[in-house]
Amino acid sequence: MPDTKRTNTKRTFVNTTPIERARFTNPGREKPGQMTDAEREVTRMALSGEPQTVEAFTPVIYEYWAPFNYQNIKVELGRVEPYMGAEFNPDGVELDQPSYGAITIVEKEPIVEVTVIGSACVPPGFVLLQAEPLEWKYPRTGVKMKIDNLWGQHIRISQWRLGIDEGWRDAGLSCADFHLPESSKVTIMGASQMDVCLPDTKVERLEVPGYNDGHYCFRLIRVTVKRSCRLGGESKD
Image (cartoon, rainbow, N blue to C red; front, side, top):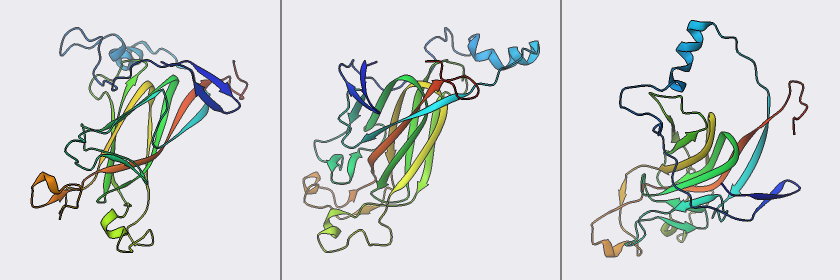
């Protein structure tokens, strides 16, 4: 993960490493159908009666804006030749449909929440998240989440040019808020409905009678990381 320098509350990244998408299957599982010791944590603790300790932490929120030119973020637009709708546009980063398009974020501190703000091409939209947990102990779920039925769209550019603006009744932003176990990396994808309309000038070369504009456009991503502290709020750092 990249090193950082801190200036007040903002971060300046000084180096980076290649960023792969977050995997969601346990790399430490030796054989299919067999759980590791960590994956048996709940049943083991229940049988032993091992006491647990409440943990308090300080949340720290990092804010990332489109086009996401940060060294700890990798943007994969997806299919761009021929043009399928994936692009950087005035409303954000419009990703190709999963799993072609994705945004991957890594952090040095444990990620515990991710908030996505954006808009659908054809609402309702949805956002997917998959994460690499710090402890691989979720044998039958992984850390995968989905939030659907997201209202709000950005006006199609052909309609915008005809004078339909953000005052239109369906124009607006949506928000997907994910709370997750401590993780080091998240990959986010999204899309919207598969309704077909007439192709515009950008997609005429596809030589098809209609155009599927089922994308989601990402404008802002907030990542909450966990800072350990003592009960009562005194930091350990």
